Image 1 (cartoon, rainbow, N blue to C red):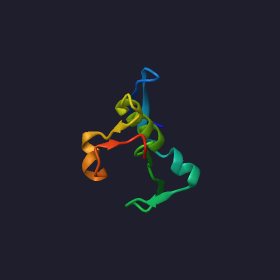
Image 2: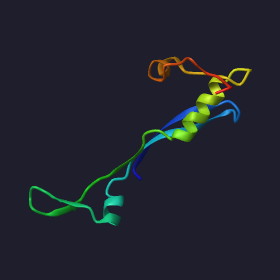
Image 3: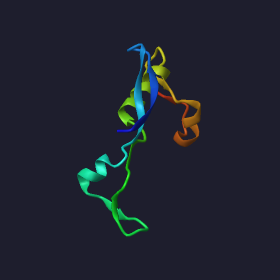
Length: 95
């Protein structure tokens, strides 16, 4: 892999940031293994360059939301930006 960009999220229980998103540029490494090619303007066959992305590691994101937004009574505050799509502001511990 030639370049990699990670987004990390704070996990209070572990007192550290952990990767929740990732984007990698693999040059032609994966394409060579899979034999994925394209025809260049000059007619030659060349291997494509590939990207590898983890848009969101769902289990880790859910764990981060729970750790960062859990109340003393066990309920979870829904992050403000998610409230319009979820239609609630709190996930009650009795649910």
